[in-house]
Length: 253
Length: 343
Ligand SMILES: Nc1ncnc2c1ncn2[C@@H]1O[C@H](COP(=O)(O)OP(=O)(O)O)[C@@H](O)[C@H]1O
Ligand SMILES: [Mg+2]
Image 1 (tube, protein in one colour):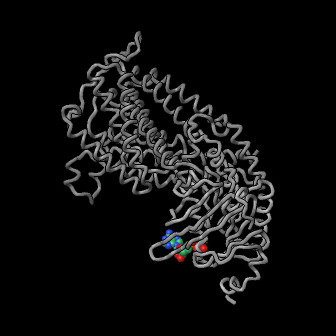
Image 2 (tube, rainbow over the protein chains, first blue to last red):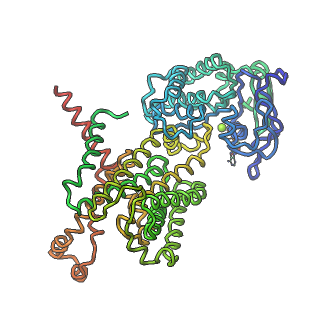
Image 3 (cartoon, helix red, strand yellow):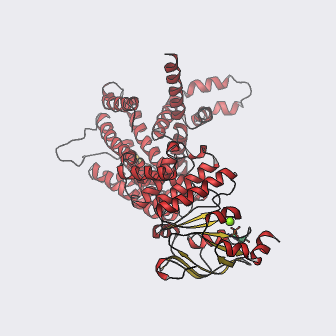
């Protein structure tokens, strides 16, 4: 890891979360560099989702700090953390079921353009809203689905919609929680290609949890290995695959 | 936004509504006014229910607040428009306070909390005799002047009040229509679909729901403020929780997924209600012929038209899933498709 403070987007320090009896996240510290794709890996129950919940304000940490571009965000409500520049997905895809794909994205654009108190403009005739929606549809490659209600889409397409919603917020940091979970090989491969492409196109910083090591090695420049709430190791693909500790925990050998 | 057919329907309805006083008997004009006011009440309820996904069981509180405040002022010879304005503001202020607390919860908890607040308002109205007249309500509300110099409101006929209601209700409906089709309105629907996702899109969901609650309360207040001078009385029944179920029924009957659903529901509901009330005699005769019915019930000839209404509403609600309006639209589209295929 490069430790220059200037291009650090996220700085997590001594983050801890206790649930009654369980220390789900235990004294976790790491830094994310601008524009990098970092993966968090670890077996089920390692604390990956809890870590995301702490960063995104879904849960309050027991102790520790999270700084987004040197600004403390612990204590902010989730909507303010989004406004500060962090977008996230959920392990179980979270979108607006009975709205169309275009409406799903438009909701995010309304938030970005701070139009939530516009009670008068006809939403279908708002040029800047709908242009932004169109740009995102093209960026993710789902223009053809624009008018479909999202609850009729395949699982893979629904994940794309969630990613599109997050991109529409123009965040600086994107947290994806198991973006390929429950997907076929081809679908997973498509998502991996898309994430790489989006990272190139937007320059966003990505943090991704993933349990398929092959996917991780293919995608991430830097890997954080978690085990029982703690960071076991942080390094590049080589370092992780060479580590006997990781092999013991992760591969059970 | 609308297709040509919808524009024609809207234009013809509004034109028809303005011409009706020339054709309709005073009785039917009263009925139509009732439909307009209850339709607005149901539409305001549906801003919370159909759009925001919050089921209020205490919406009568805001209707009653509008009705009592306007009724009280008009009775003490305030101009009507001033009374209406005060009624709307009072209802919106009440909704600001009670809404702040109500939107902390959602789903069934929200419904229970609004029900509880509704009962509190009812109790206050029932007990505060000096102002509200207690169980008698405020009676003898006669409009003496409108509030616009030079314009007299002739109360001999019912058409003057009908026109006033029509203008204000059409304006309110237009306002609601713009709100539901605005960015704010789209966020309301998003909060109904997935409140957590909306929060993680950067929106303060609680604040959004609170504003919807205030708007819905204010609109219900307008319906109520027009109601009491129209009925010439404000009685505590309009604050009771049973009255809160009226817009629920109307909305479900007409369809909560359509903007105009509550209006269609109110029309059907009030139409059926009056038809049953005026034909009760026949039903009782018919019932008396049935062998299994206890004689005492038939002899009592109770005012049981509610029972018949329920019996009629049941198949309507079960038979038109998603509401009558949605079903009719579907049927229309189906016909249209058949015709275009056969060409
Ligand atoms: N809300 C919660 N309440 C209590 N325990 C929780 C909660 N969320 C997660 N945990 C526990 O914290 C640990 C870490 O869970 P999680 O962060 O979901 O792991 P991962 O995403 O890596 O599979 C698990 O033991 C889990 O049971
Ligand atoms: Mg998880």
